[in-house]
Image (cartoon, rainbow, N blue to C red; front, side):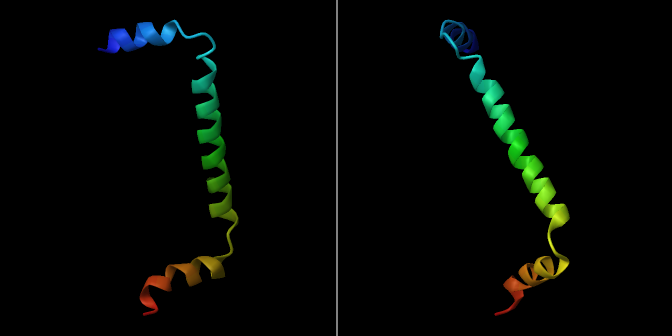
Length: 55
């Protein structure tokens, strides 16, 4: 089954760009998330963390 998929994918022209685009989107998303976590205000984090216990 995997040989069939691999051989089929190799015949599609221009398909090699999709893994690069996927990796770029993935890397960018997690770098932005990482940046947000370290720059978020402590008061906001504390307020949001207490939301489940407010009721």
